[in-house]
Image 1 (cartoon, rainbow, N blue to C red):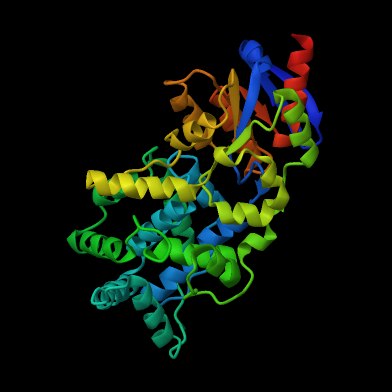
Image 2: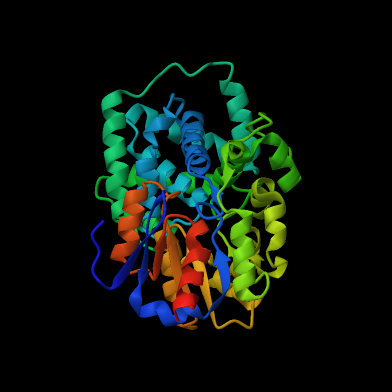
Length: 405
């Protein structure tokens, strides 16, 4: 790939080239702490999360519209388009956004079914129990209708266009764009608001529909029950999509970083949950400073507390630097810390963090973040400090700049 001469280009791995901005070499040699995103950095989650998003959307469309919906319509390309907007660090939010637009674009007779079913579900106090009962009842009448292929092709293109107009505020930008959509009449907007109320998207697992369905398919029934202390309602399969994930980071990488930093000065600032990370990483996670592990469990808890105090929803998800600052505070004192991420919202997180504390550098990793070439292009176009194929090249870069300083 052609880059200007402000970058050093290095060939460190068979997985791709590495790039380092010449202007940050002095800061890089003083790095003595590292904070990592989890998925795409420590764990290869290329298939699991995207499959869980597609399965969640298809399951809920079938439930609410009474029509068979192929999961492959929600392609990696569509999901990545939403994530590239910078406001969708949560896969729950991606699933919600795709679901809502899809329901509103369904052909008339299916949308009428959604309208009737959502209205009938409103009388239940618990939306999860309402959905479970409706699935139970509809199981006696198997879904036979299918959506025609031309609509599905058009839908894929429309989802891509919709993702392009979204902004860093994620779900808020979804609501804004749908409510101002000239294609939607008053009835469609009313259906949108009623469906939003039913889904209760601002809640968590066991309260909101999308997060609960997503986590049941992602974790499988066994890990779901262990994680949340709840019986699954929608997926009884013991194994979940998480079981196809693999570890990226090598133990020797942590050995070398520990030698460079004079101790285990590494943490995690992630939009994913702790339990799945423990499930995949096992003893590797025990090598991190436990006080510097900030997963979405903690972010969500603080969000809920802040929302109750404020009387309105509060988002601390990336690119808000809350999790990065929280993790970094447990690694003090440090001169510079690198944050290793695999997405544009990770890069934006560091950009925002530097407005308050200039001691952060961003390392973008691209090989496990599909489509890898677009991710690489985005990082270089955004002038990221360091761009590597994987986290495993990080100690080589740090050792090299120290040696040549």
